[in-house]
Length: 241
Ligand code: GLP
Image (cartoon, rainbow, N blue to C red; front, top):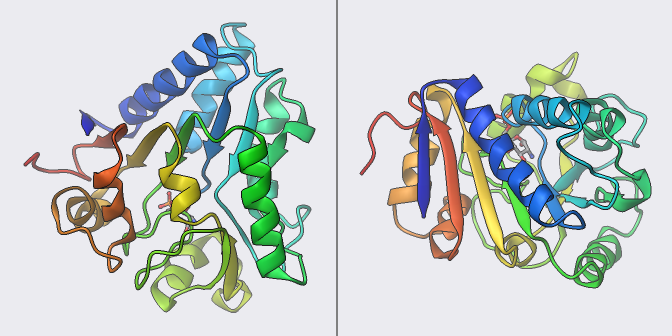
């Protein structure tokens, strides 16, 4: 595990963007696993900046996203497809046909999960998976309780519904279910980049990096990954152990 503990959010975002940008430069047809949430927004802004300066070219890049709310279609502004278009894809030269987000509208969630996993295998696997961190230690929408291998439908915990309600008009509008890449999809990525900032993430980050490997803290499984890079700020990790 390699940890970059940066001064603040901007420095964290800069570092994360450099790591992703370096991969895009070295492997222009790479497969990027992407994440939603507030944490990676600064990273995406810097990738957009590098594209605008003609440093980065995304025309051959492919992406797979971690998760999507169930019941929201891609035009809904709270959906993760909308988030990705709005915060990254609409501003770079990526072919949208090469961008993948789990289907939140699929009637048969299990079949949609299997299809997503097959699609990832067909792409040759992910070169780098970007991950945010839930306050309860979740990654993607893999909630505490069990490690599930494949892409699957999940019932969101009350704490996640509450944490994510800030982005909705009202907590009642937060979907109760999501479809998320499972631990196989995440852990088979050749490299993993975990980003976390702010004091709300300290407990989860310390448990993930230094605690026992347990499904009660889904991100703790990352300790087993041979190529884990953590980029955080000082508030999220007051002390390195
Ligand atoms: C959501 C997403 C996660 C994300 C987490 C943290 O629940 N499903 O992938 O990592 O939120 O979000 P934030 O970065 O806004 O704290």
